[in-house]
Length: 389
Figure 1 (cartoon, rainbow, N blue to C red):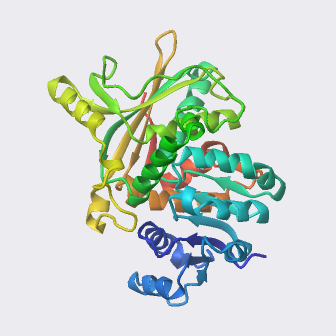
Figure 2 (cartoon, rainbow, N blue to C red; figure 1 turned 90 degrees about the vertical axis):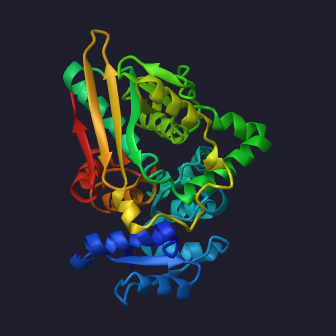
Figure 3 (cartoon, helix red, strand yellow; figure 1 turned 135 degrees about the vertical axis):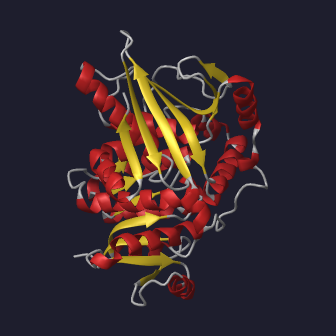
């Protein structure tokens, strides 16, 4: 029997400590979840534990990404590792290797599609053999989007006997900031793509996470355009680059549940009229996430700012006959921190408690956790999934 159910790796960092706070507040009183905080420095972990007012007997585990033996020892002690240590292309590869070999489940907050593909190529076979369930992108990228499409397509099959050939994801509202880790990952990904043609080709491939598959050309979400259907201007959405890849992987892992000719686009709604157009153009021209003014890892908004945040995403499809279904996914905290810490926590707990039928391998959330995770998020994490029409 493993010593722990769950280890939070990176628990002394900004996002990692939010995960620890959430687990303690939501599940600490129950006393039946055996979890630990992990990081490079035991003294820093102890300091963070005490600053947060966590129980003094909260276990602390020392592990370092530069020390393979320490990672192997850590994953041997737990059923699941939840890691917030990014950029993952710099600090995550050996931990994935360790979990895949040991049969330890793994969740992260990764939005780095090229690195994810490399992990798929290198460790899928080991994970399948050991029984490790490796689940990437268990934060704002890409859970609300992956599960929103999944719920919509389930409803389409239920009503019409077939999935929508095309689904549109549109961010209706969002208040809050992206995490410093997301910015750092984006900057590292851009740097590598500019210096390596093969990396660049993989980065722009919508099927980058589906080895050996080449589907139809996907809609262009990098433009400013007006939607007659929604009476709103639409702007590029920065997270579409990873969300679209994960959704196509989900489709493939579910034996093309959405169809082999499935089309998906994701954009940000900015409103009607001249004002909406002006905002859309400003969004399209904003490069701050890739520049020096982007949030830094280890920094983040205050508790009040996190609690004042929100997001609201629409997913819809239309049949040839004109029948439409819409699904809304809403979160009650800012996406980059307040909601993300709950999303990754519930993903880890879903692997522990409900997803026993999911075999070893490298997964996305919809095929690995599906309706079980939707239910957990609605019950615990302030995320709602509503069929609107």
